Amino acid sequence: MAPTPEQVTAALARVNDPEIRRPITDLDMVKSIDIGLDGEVRVGIYLTVAGCPMRDTITRDVTAAVSAVPGVSRVRVEMDVMSTEQRKVLQTKLRGDRGPEKEIPFAKPGSLTRVFAVASGKGGVGKSSVTVNLAAAMSASGLKVGVVDADIYGHSVPRMLGVGERPTKVEDMIMPPVAHDIKVISVGMFKPEGNSAVVWRGPMLDRALHQFLADVYWGDLDVLLMDLPPGTGDIAISVAQRMPTAEILVVTTPQQAAAEVAERAGSIAAQTHQQVAGVIENMSWLPCPHCDERISVFGEGGGQQVADALTRTLGARVPLLGQVPIDTRLREGGDEGKPLVLTDPDAPAAAELRRIAAGLGKRSSSLKGRKLDISPAGR
Image (cartoon, rainbow, N blue to C red; front, side, top):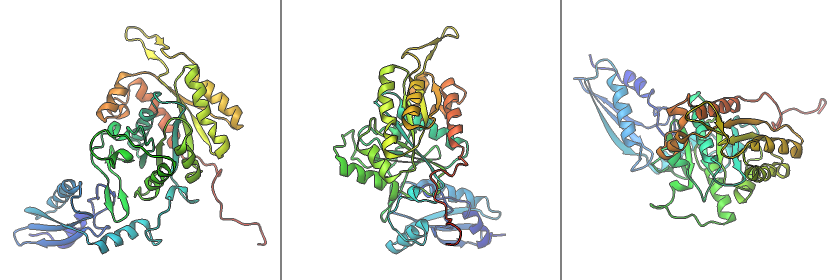
């Protein structure tokens, strides 16, 4: 017996758009369903744009879902492209009844997304590696995670997460690529082919950051991680202005020179009135390959020094969240686009990063920084 349209529609409801992460039936992407007497099913699908990079993935997922329906003998998927009007309707549906206004959802008082701005005083301390592995660990634990590669000049997150495709544009809304179940956006995805430099100044940097936060469709995220450039330049200031509730994570290495610079990066919170979530000491030691000894390649105590100094400067406790040991596999995973917390979660460095991520992923019950819709009695 041939399947019914209702059965096929129910199967299609289990197919999510790879970029938007919602059922294609909810997004009005199902154009038609034709069922032959011999059980052959032809499904028409609307793509958001011509040349959609997820075309093959959608075809595969639709074919698999419909093939599982009893009575289906064969599945044919035919692609079409949404009209301008259909894309506008989709954009409004995704952004709600407010329409396609350009606002930063994470900066709104009712936002439930916890935002971490990962900062460092200088380059070369492994800030991006820490960001990527924290994101992967949180995602693996079941959280919905996004990463903004805000290190405009030194963007490296796409490679570290193995992202090769470019974002898809739907009207003036950008669909971010997804890797390891993490939504990712980076200026490197918009550059021409090759390893050309980005030569931008202050206003252009601020505009790029705003686009990453407002024009990209992030959906409902639990956590957004922002990989900031080293130091306290334009991007750090823009983050403070556009995302005042973002919590700062300071990454440093153990040596005193790095710790002093990292302290300056974290102390910007005193001027921007942001909260520092804590300090992460990277490259803390090297496990001896021949014994159980720890080799302090870059000295000791830098992370705790930064945490103590920021506690005094800010007048609030800034904890040392963890100490990540040196592991060549952490670097290799970054080069290959395979975070260590996923490929070898029990490695000492991965275990420490997963522990830190677990602590950060827990939502605080504090009301600090939240707008409460209450007024004094009698008003």
